[in-house]
Length: 150
Ligand SMILES: NC(=O)c1ccc[n+]([C@@H]2O[C@H](COP(=O)([O-])OP(=O)(O)OC[C@H]3O[C@@H](n4cnc5c(N)ncnc54)[C@H](O)[C@@H]3O)[C@@H](O)[C@H]2O)c1
Image: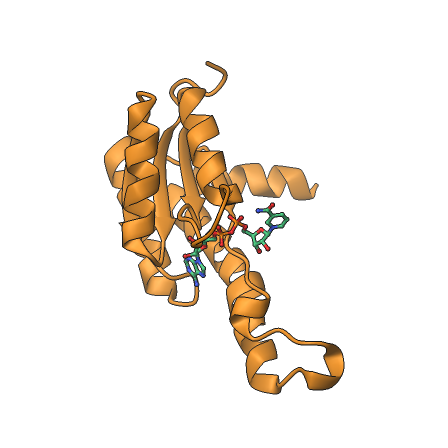
């Protein structure tokens, strides 16, 4: 149990429809097996609930939470929920990513609106989720971040 007692937030912990298993859901199931307690965050709550139910089958503690990485207040609420329940966050996995689903196209067909949408989800969403995680965890994370910058 390499992650026993660790607190993880997985953003994009649901699963797009289709065969197989996505990275987000697979990550939750694997780290649950290793003993992590997990907040499974997704804009699709039903999908996050499904992930949490699967994690529970292997004895993991996993709470589903609805948030959209393009809506910072919802991401802040997710991080606050993890800290309120477990007191801290040890692991943040930013899994959300879109391409075709966000309107991505070959360069000569790409529209400004699609580019902005994909950037807002993939780039700004990742940065802001990390930002909200640091804010929620308080000074200990900021101190560790400044150590890494030196
Ligand atoms: N699965 C693979 O083998 C693989 C390989 C390489 C790269 N990737 C990339 O990794 C990323 C994630 O892969 P996956 O397999 O977990 O995909 P997935 O589509 O199964 O899961 C992504 C989850 O993110 C959620 N999501 C989408 N937009 C969101 C938003 N704005 N806010 C919150 N949640 C949102 C979706 O509801 C979905 O549950 C994608 O960009 C994918 O292209 C996947």
